[in-house]
Image 1 (cartoon, rainbow, N blue to C red):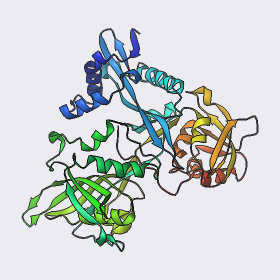
Image 2 (spheres, rainbow, N blue to C red; image 1 turned 45 degrees about the vertical axis):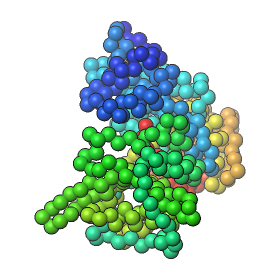
Image 3 (cartoon, one colour; image 1 turned 180 degrees about the horizontal axis):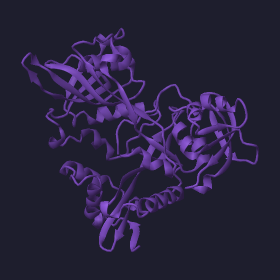
Image 4 (spheres, rainbow, N blue to C red; image 1 turned 120 degrees about the vertical axis):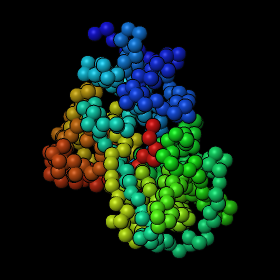
Length: 409
């Protein structure tokens, strides 16, 4: 092995990113995307593996702040741009990068690492658990009706240029972060991501459009979308492609959905990423015709078990001792006593007998409140060691709002 793992020199970014593109099939990113990712890359948090002069492995991290149950926004390493050259697979390169990265995250004091996976089965062995899911669906607006709450007519909708409306949209987004676990508090520069709209990737749809929902002169919601025109022998059959939608209250959200479902010359609204408990499912007259499907989204890894479990609150009182297995980050191994409630929590090392046994992967899956410990136990991935403690812990870890990651990274 002549491979060398080192921190990315900004002058090497083009070669480094080119290796990533090759690992993902060799299709280059658009100039717009490439520019954005170059400017967002934190080179001091990015690593590569070189075989001589050739870059053969890449991995990076963004300095994120992630909302967790209880409304706190917690430092988290956003693992990204992970790839290995096809010629150098199965040589331990990925494992070496994951090892270095988690050591660095721990040294930097971040209790969490998060990622979205191109192949979900890869990251479980490094302690990542699937913590959020996302819903895809298509509303057939020719067959499905919407039932909206009273007051919707009081909301004013106004078209706006996406770039000029960005500040107002970001203000709404920022107010939503603490209300739903799994959302990212967008750091400077990330407000550009919702505006990224390369012409070559529109798939026949229009440029991105924006509509603002206003009440008493205040922006209370927005939707970013595109329209894909289609014509058949029977007439117009276009699709509204939803990119992003946020609102501060149910009435504003309903007004936006009603608008999207009534755009002229279209017969469907396509959404690719909405929360699993999104309100649209309860506004439509026939959810079955919308054919909702789910897939994994955010994978969570507890880098510091004690700090991570103390960072969130719990919807019911909990006092439980976890026996945690973590072969990849052995500093987490052992027994942890968690005591907490809706006001806060303490999690410390203990020699007391364990109540529940699980790996750090299961803790990551349950961390944001969207995956229950009891469901993991039903799959044999969590073991109850003292009767009644699993139910107590599962209820406490749950959360009334489903966690959701609004965009990838």
